Image (cartoon, rainbow, N blue to C red; front, top):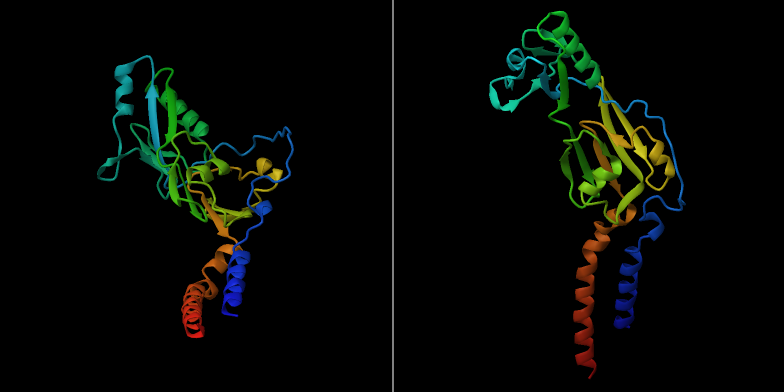
Length: 250
């Protein structure tokens, strides 16, 4: 009888740990296809606290040198770059305070180049703006929750999950959360990675400081329940009882 009980408990453990393979795959039931999407809103908008690298070149390297002198944020020499302050502006050599927040990189590039030309500080200046603190955070049911630094300033949701070691078998692939803050407003969007609509979502490509949270499914929650905590103790007790019963009945 004890043996039967042990088999029943073992069967319960096996059944409770089963996960549907249909829920564990990406982009289920999507055939070969070609999807196009508008490239609107892919240009990143600069925000307060963004750290930028700004380089300037021109036919006159001597006159250009002052604009490429390493700039430091505050008193920390280990943090070079131009920090967009709470007023949405940066301090640029000879130009002084320049508006930056709310502009795209191209718009800021054009603004600085125009000011340099109009002020007759440089002829034919070429300005390059890049992020120094483009990062994305991935949390939840992934192999390695991490903060990802993105030097090329372009990262898709699938790439971010790959860099975090992929989602675990316990992840909800139909309910992945992306948290984004724009112009002081925090936006939360849930994406279904089993749907082809993922590729046309404006949240497929991540932006700087986005947070990706992968929610655990019921199997993960039940695995940490009281049942899983007590089962090993119950199994051990039944094993001891079975040994004792066997020896007494001989």
